[in-house]
Structures are given as structure tokens and as C-alpha cells.
Length: 240
Ligand SMILES: [Fe+2]
Image (cartoon, rainbow, N blue to C red; front, top):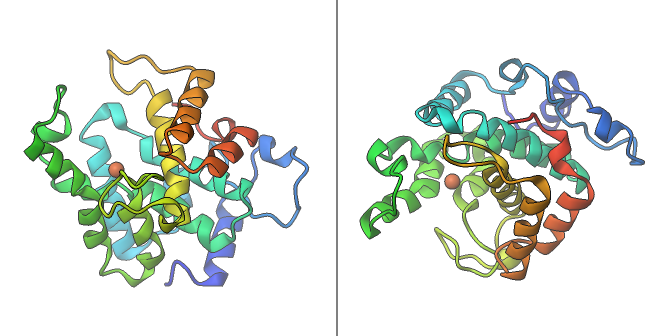
């Protein structure tokens, strides 16, 4: 089954998800695609089958190696779609954001614990290993034709608007749009998740300020951060 067939994209999204109240109450085009609701049973909502399921399990394995990052990718799947809806993206793009939210860090599967969970600063060599995960993730998913639409999102989710990101140092709109969407929600989640016993979650307003600084420093797409803020995307995803 092709994940990106028009019929499947629209049917699965419509069939498995429904609008949360926060979106329903907005004055928006009634034809807009829908957003997964926060309390939906995720595993059954995932439009994966066969080999895609194996990759999904692999991605979960990466996440669950560290109990403190559990549910990060799940939140990204929701918040990426919510931001995509606010941007009025089509269903195929929303589905890519949904799947990409789950799979974006799958390339971390080959990174040793000693590097992935190192509490201190990484050495130059360790940093190189970390920086390889977007390309490694792309390689893992590349053989699957059904995941072709997600590959740019996996490869480019650590690029930066000013060209200082990796792996390709793309700038501005050279960075695929869906990868830019994932960057915004990824950074917001990293800031607001209390994912370590010693790390306090940053309050929403402070996190929004930091996103704003990310725009000023030219790391993030200003338009997407503005939409994230105006649509109050953080209210449309499961809590940490
Ligand atoms: Fe990553």
C-alpha cells in the first residue's frame, strides 16, 4: 500500500483522527484537513504497515533507549501536523509530517549509548557521529518507496535558516519546507520537555522568546515561528 496515495492520505487522516476543540473553535476553512486528537490511540492511528511498522518500531527503540526522551517523536508527529494545518498544507504534506515526526531521528539507532547519553560536552569525533544521524536515517528509510516523501524531512531536520546547520548547510528556502516545520516544533519540544531529572521544563512564554531569538539569530524560519505562535500550536499536542 502506498502511504502517499491521495486516497490513502485523505482516508487515513479522516478515518483515524479528529479535530481537537482548540482547532474546531477556530474560524477556519471547513475543508481544512484534520489534526490528530491528543488522546487518540497512536499505534492504531499510524498509517504504517509491513516494513514501515518495523521502521516505526526501530524509531521507538531509539527513543526508548532513554526513558527521558520517550514520547518526544509522538509529540512532534502531533505538533508538526498541527502547524501544517495552521499553514493550510495539503493532506500528503500532513501525512509526511506525521510519519516524519516519528521517524526523523531513526538514524540515531547506530549511535552508541556512550555518545548519545553523554552528559558532558561531546568530543569532535563524537560530535561527528551525532551529526551523521540525519544521513544515516535517510539511508535506512531510502529503500522504501512509500517513505520517499519523508526523506527530505529526515535528512534536513538539523539544517538552519542561516546555513549553519547540517548535513548540507542549506540556507533559507533551500531547506525543504516540511523540514523547516519540524525544526520549529522540535526546538519548542526540546525546550519545554522536562526530559531529564536535573532539567526543568521551560515555561511556554520563555520557550516562545527563545524561538523568537532563533528567528533573530537567523536559525529559524520567521514565518513559521509566527504561525506557531499565532495558532498556539503547543495547545494542540499531548502534554509531556
Ligand atoms: Fe535529530
